[in-house]
Structure formats: C-alpha cells, structure tokens
Length: 286
Ligand SMILES: C[S@@+](CC[C@H](N)C(=O)[O-])C[C@H]1O[C@@H](n2cnc3c(N)ncnc32)[C@H](O)[C@@H]1O
Image (tube, rainbow, N blue to C red):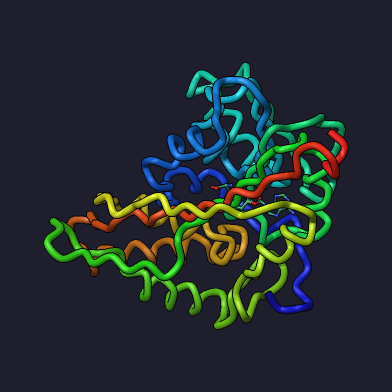
C-alpha cells in the first residue's frame, strides 16, 4: 500500500447491498475445515474483525456460543444483522459498528478471532496486539483470503467467462488509472506481509490450509454488476453523479460479452492461516 494512504469511512461506501450477491463465495468446505481445525463444538466466542455482511461469521455462528462481528461500515453491519436473522442465528450473534482500531471496546474475551480479507485495511500492528489481548490462552487467530495466483479456465462451460479485464478498463475510464480506495488511491494495491506482523504480536504458527475451490458458478448480469460495486476500488460512492451512467455502460459491456446475460466461472480456493496465542505461561491476559 502506498505509504501515504489514509483510511477513511467512505472505503466501502454503498457497497454493502451488493456484497453478498456479488462476491464469489469462499470454498465450499471452509466452514467444515475451520470446525475441524478449531475443534468447534457450539461453545466459545468468535470475534470477526472487518466482518462485512457476515460472510464468515454467519455460517460459523451455529458452531460457537456467540459470534461478534465488528465493522465500521453501517451498511455492512446492517446486512450482517439481516443475514444472521435470515439464517436463524440472530440470538447468538452481535454486530458492532466500530473500527478494529477501537477494540477491545468492552467486548470481552474470545476463543477465536477471524480476519477475512480485512486485515490489510487496518493499523495492523495495533490491531494484532489488541486482538491478542482479547483472546484466551491457546486461542486462535484465523486469517482467511481467496488464494492468489490461481487460474481456472472456463473451457467446456455453458456460458462465457466474466470479462474482468474489460470491466477494469471501464472502471478506469470513470475513476482514473490509479486504483481508488476511499478518498485516497493505492498505486501499488493493498498490502501483504501480514505474517511478520502477526508473529511480531506474539502469535505462534501459522498452520496453513488451502481449501479447494474450482466449483462451477453460473453468474447473471446482476451478479457481475454486484461484484463490481462490492469492491472498494469501484464502490458506488466513488462514482458520484456518474454512477447510473457507469452502470448502464457496464451492462452494455456485459451484454456484448454474453448476449444471454449469463456467465460461468469457477470458485476460488480459500487460503487459511491459523495462528495461536501461547497457552499457559507467557499468555496474554484473558
Ligand atoms: C473485503 S471486505 C471483507 C468482509 C468479510 N470479512 C468477508 O470475508 O466477506 C473488508 C471489510 O473490512 C472492513 N474494514 C475496513 N477497514 C476496517 C477497519 N479499520 N476496521 C474494521 N473493519 C474494517 C470493511 O468495512 C469491509 O466490510
């Protein structure tokens, strides 16, 4: 990330209603892998930091006594609460609109904390240290993301692939050549290197798991529009009064790629790193 990028509250402005529909799902076996690796049994507490619309915490909620999702975006918190209610897990979930930097916020002690494609947006040293202090000894920090560098073809599938390159070019026509992020820009994309930071905060590990994707996904024009608006780099708020014009051009582009408005692609694999707080002597206060 460029050194002078500064977080602001518009980062995902307007993206929340599109997020659940637009983003590609995590690998189908992710919840089972986490249940096995963390020994989840319907007790314990999960802190999901940068929870978005509850993508991870909602399907995990039945495996904990309580899940607490935190996110600074009001739309995301609202979506998470709605999806938890739809999934029948409202009673064991809580959604708190704060930045990770405002933790611990009297939220108590947790058995596990998750960062699913969110850690790179935070003051990472501060947040890793704070979360370590919120986990009980032997607790788990789980870092989840789409596996990078994976390439699946769409040969043999019934519909064309999503024209991601052309969508990116259209976004640039509207928002400029440099990747946008809130009120700032990220010329070098988002940051990596989280392992050093998590280790520096005193976590042990990690154990790495790749949960396989590759399942065929059929996507409609509206799903791809939602995907585009779910991204921080093309969140609706960035387009201002040109938002409707952008959406019209995007739909024209999609129809020119697939006159039926149907697309196929394969789901990404999910990369999971499980870190632990030391158990016993040297443990952070629980
Ligand atoms: C790419 S989304 C991931 C959402 C969800 N965890 C998932 O896996 O789908 C990133 C989320 O991080 C949130 N976020 C950004 N900066 C944050 C911060 N400083 N503290 C907490 N959450 C933050 C955003 O509002 C957004 O909901």
